[in-house]
Length: 192
Ligand SMILES: [Mn+2]
Figure 1 (cartoon, helix red, strand yellow):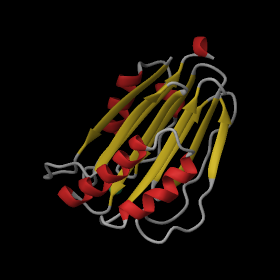
Figure 2 (spheres, rainbow, N blue to C red):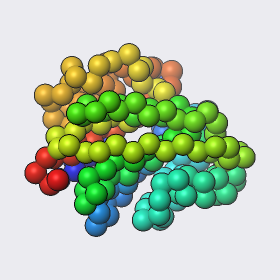
Figure 3 (cartoon, helix red, strand yellow):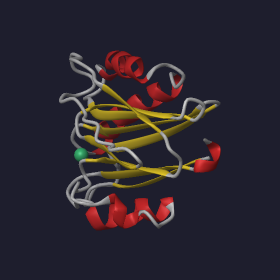
Figure 4 (cartoon, rainbow, N blue to C red):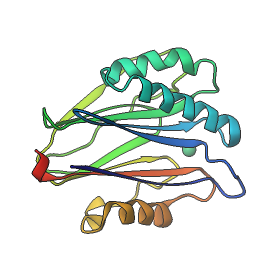
């Protein structure tokens, strides 16, 4: 089983959150998209939502092609930082691709330290780099926008339920002056 929980809020004095996260369940597993629209407010939300809608509609495509194809629709928006995480339970792998400040952390048997490429989805696409990790069972992953301080150790949260991890990271590490999003994924060992 793949458990996914999202915690999110807008920056201080803003009603609309410019970060969007989308979870798409597929026969093979799950695709998670996280986008942080440039700036704040309505238009930031519009850009982030456009990315996540595109990802949802193309959820069966390889993540690199979703990311590169999204450039076209995103050109009509103000752009976003974005990341895609695909978990394939049959192949027991997690794949990541990111552009801009969305980070993935993981606690697993191997070191999980992918990097997002610099840039904005919606401007000319430069080089993409994707990362692929083997799942071992009971792997824990956190994806977060730059409205969350990266100064935390995921080990500290490991014993908690997914929803509680997401909410605590948001509460304890969220920056008041930026939209903040935290997505927690746990892959149960039983399903692998
Ligand atoms: Mn941000």
